[in-house]
Image (cartoon, rainbow, N blue to C red; front, side, top):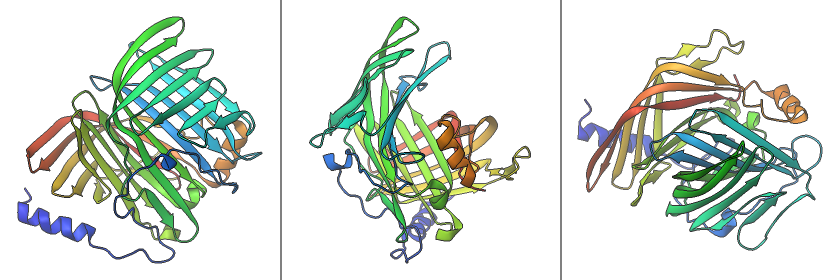
Length: 361
């Protein structure tokens, strides 16, 4: 077992670093406040531009049930195309999906405040919360996200890739109470759950930025723990950056980009032509002021392997697959996460799922 003295030394060693050199992926840096400008579209003309507003809802006992994404993209033919995707998983485990796409003159947004409208789908809100509306043949949704934690960023919210481009992330609803209704297959369901929402954009093709992602979430009525780490492509020296969020109904416990993730016990996907390798163990160390978050995730089995391009239209999927071979591994795990604060220690010990997402071999 690591002593507290060794832990302090390790934490100091992890995070003492100078500014990024040209040609490297920057760090997120010091935390910066969120303003309504962070919610707005950042329309760009480059072909590689993409932007997304993602919303998720979990039941109070921690089961994912709703996902809604609004997006803008220049990939394919024409700039600033938009659309939305909606998914609903009912109590029986059945998932119902719908989506819609729009040309640049078929969707709109407000330049004051925050309001996006894609046909009969829309999202609007402010620093206090969000309202999401979806109208499809298969699904209708009316959802209200009431923030329990104000919007925030991982550090400054941006990763810069030399002078080549940027990736930006904002947690528009880090943790929220979600209420509303979903109508699917003629049945109306009352929704009461826990929400999480993000806004991200990039002006670089993913395969030129990122080699792989690690992602983990556990969200329920008691606590929200969200973790992610990204590794850049070798052109940016395979640098890594990540974030850890820990929140409950009383507010923020930890929200930091001062993180270190260690992966070991790798096994190879023998059915993968790319030779992708998946870690059986993930160790986490994160620091937010005087709060420390440490933990271990242990693989139980590979639940599912997905193709992240499967839901793209034919043109966009063809373009993406010309340059990359993505795979998204969903890994069932046991985990034990310790949160050490000035007020005392808290341990979360359960089973869940982490993801290892390869963009490039």
